[in-house]
Image 1 (cartoon, rainbow, N blue to C red):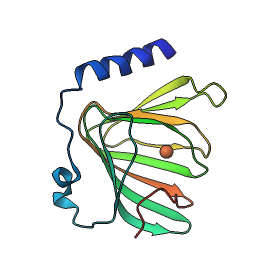
Image 2 (image 1 turned 30 degrees about the vertical axis):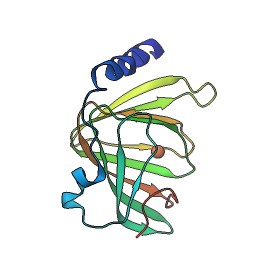
Image 3 (image 1 turned 60 degrees about the vertical axis):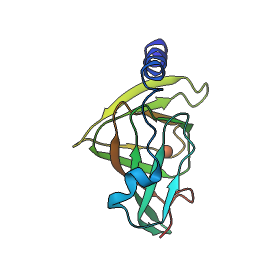
Image 4 (image 1 turned 90 degrees about the vertical axis):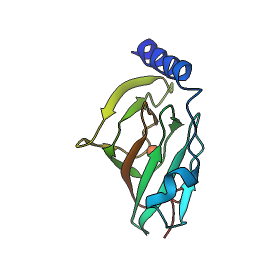
Length: 144
Ligand SMILES: [Fe+2]
């Protein structure tokens, strides 16, 4: 499984470096709320727009462009993700080695959640919008 995942990411990096990287202004048109965060990505962009932020839950609308790779990370919060435009490939990693162990394709109508402290990453082959929430609220997310 690791080789297949690595090949997919290598191929994605080969075919996408010349794609335009959208700026925040490019994706801002339906998001007048200036309260957003820009995630640190391996490639491409990841913008998060606050929808709700309370101590026990944070909800945000996210955008990543075609070619974006969200690096492996983990956090103590449960995270629920649902794509509503485009698609995302979520990768779950082994807790001990960090090696990729499972790939989950999320597209409109599919919802997935990661348990707390589960290492995960993601990549995008098309411009994608999704909603995600954390329980409790993640301090890294846009605040209201
Ligand atoms: Fe996450």
